[in-house]
Image (cartoon, rainbow, N blue to C red; front, side, top):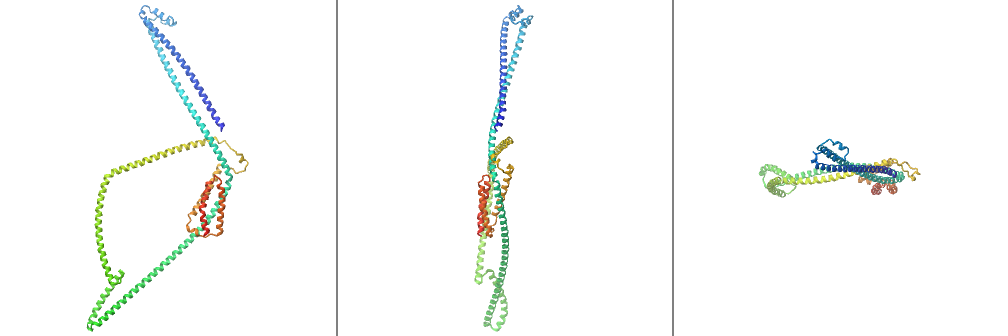
Length: 507
């Protein structure tokens, strides 16, 4: 990894040195151009001053122009050399005009040179700023690269530690797998036994339910038969009792009539007695029915019962009138309350709607705030995950060519260990644990009457022995950090299952 770091640092250093050389060259060019521009400007200023002085002198001698322009031109251009020959045949005014034109052209040229100088300076400043920005960007990129390099080194160290730890734990995977397979076999055998017990208990329950239903039906039939016989016996007793009373009454009336009446009256009354007997028998039958309906045997009680019924009827009529009056009052009160409700409804509808609107807006703002917070957190998580993923992918690309061989494990003959093997083992162990937890949940869902099925003593002893052996195996598994959580689930499930097994042994 340090070699790769030096390889990254060397090109960056060369680029920085090259940029610095370019900057120095640009600074030199700018200084040279500036000096040349300053020299040209100075020369032009001197020429302008000199021309102005000459113009002033020519103006002073303008009055002498008509007297002799050639003399003036010679005097003006006595130290110019070839320029004196150019103005030899010109008048003073023409020479002055020509000089003015030259002065204007030189002024224009001076302005153009100034503009060019400013343009070059501005371009040089822009290039300098661009170079500075590029240099800063390169420095930032260098810092980020160094930071990522450090992070990659830390991640690589952690991966190496994790790899060594996994290689150490791979030594115990076979024993752990054997113990887990033994646990699974025990659990399957126990599940089979529990299923057999459940089936037996279900059959026993169904047989008991059928027997109970049969017994209840038989008991119901016997009770109905007894009630029918008792009712028939009661009816016969009442009929015989009524017949005996009728016979006694007729005998008593016949004896009294024989003692008091004569034979003639007896003959006439015999016809009347037949009609009276019919009426009496009719009244007696009606009275008997009344007694059966009311449940009393004395005449006074029957009369008292009818009187009380009359009072009850009057009381009920009175209650009916009071209730009708109360219903009328309640109806009026209902109409009044309905009117008040309509008034309140139409008057407070605007307030209620405004209050509901404000409450809804508050809820909406709260939900929007929650949504914004959740969105910010989601963006942060996505950004973090993308950064981590990029770092891990970059690190994986950098570490593809590295193959570490531990000398401790190189001397030992072990089965080949790779990521696929680890994932396969972990998936198998997690699947076995889920199967075991499923069996435990099935055991917990068994009905309560299932615990009363007796088991052979040898089987219960074997179960307790299996528990002890599994607890010893779990002690070995608990000593390893890799499968501690998974083994803890098995221990918890078995600790919850122990009282159930003891209860089976008792019964």
